[in-house]
Amino acid sequence: MEYLAPTKRGKFRSNLGFILAASGSAVGLGNIWKFPYIAGEYGGGAFVLVYLACIAVVGLPLLYAEMIIGRRGGSDVLGSLQKLTEASGWSGRLVSATAGAIAVASGFFILSFYSVVAGWALHYLAISLQLAGTHPDGAAATFEALASDRETSALWHSLFMVMVVGVIAGGVQQGIERTCKVLMPALMVILLGLLGYVAAAGGLDASAGFLFQPDFSKITADAVLEALGHAFFTLSLGMGAMMTYGSYLDSDAHLIRDQFAIAFLDTTIAIVSGLVIFAVVFAMGATPGAGPGLVFITLPGLFAEIPGGAFVAIAFFALLVLAAWSSGISLLEVVVAVAVDRFSVPRPLAAVGVGIAVWILGMFSAFDGAFLDFMDNLTTRYMLPVVGLLIAIAAGWLVSKEDREAGFRAIPGGGVRLAAVWTFTIRWITPTLVVLVILHGLKIL
Image (cartoon, rainbow, N blue to C red):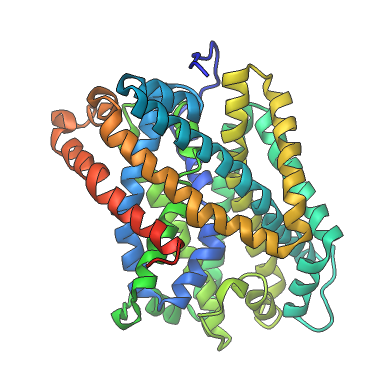
């Protein structure tokens, strides 16, 4: 399909709105659920250092690449890639079509099962508020009952999708930007409040020691590849979210500053979440390597035993819901932007139509945990890294020098040296590491 520039698109009112929305996209269940448990599995501090290195050599270069392609392309994922690579001929058309299609599909697929997990967080928030009951046999039985209860999972999945669709239907400024300007400060206030609680209640010293005192004997090849993969997932890379949000910016003058702000907020929230979670774990004598059940099984059981645990549970699961909501908004926007820009579908209609389609697919995950696991593995292990590899190729080799380095020109001296470092990284280092992630997902490494 020939690229047609949209005649009228929404824009973020301010760079702060963009930073909060993009940070909201990055900050999600990956920060509060996944990062703590994989850090626990791979020894804490050493894994954190490896993860930070992966953010630097994979996350930041790809984050800028997505943002600058979206900003300079000024359209949805498919349109922006097509516009900026069209001068490269057939190779540009092939890469842009493949990367764009997989990115949009990734956002669609991820939201379908992500909404189910976010629905579980809503259910646990309801339990904390005493609006729903727990299983008499404890936290593990409560989660098993929830995960196997099709009707309850479907109900919360449906409610979460209504929350997401309602925001997207409101538009960029009145929906996404206005909501994220409330969600992100609220999330940070709750997180800081929880940090203050664990600092006063005890366990923070042990938690800090676990996360900040590296034991490199715990680092294996699997740990490094897991850190590489999580750097991808946590910054919302490979699913078109940052490219879509970048297309709603009026200027590329602050992209370098903005990408560091986004990565800083995302990483800080992940680490502070880990501090809070492991403080509770250590204070109650539990193990940090509790795996995926850490949030939905281990912590609820511990909340029932600690002083003021009812209030802590409310705050924690409210935090989890807010993080999931902000990410869900960006995932739906990726697909809705395609419908609005390329097919001129009115935004409210596009939001509802795409939302219903996602909701239908999500029902399969709500009804079958094996299907949810399949969708999770398909997207995070294969689809996102493939898109990341293609975007690195597009940004490094197929996009013009003027477009790809536009964000560096606001830096004193024209940012020539920094642009050269980024170009070398995105052309050679980032693709190599992303290929390793793909091979790891294929069980070759």
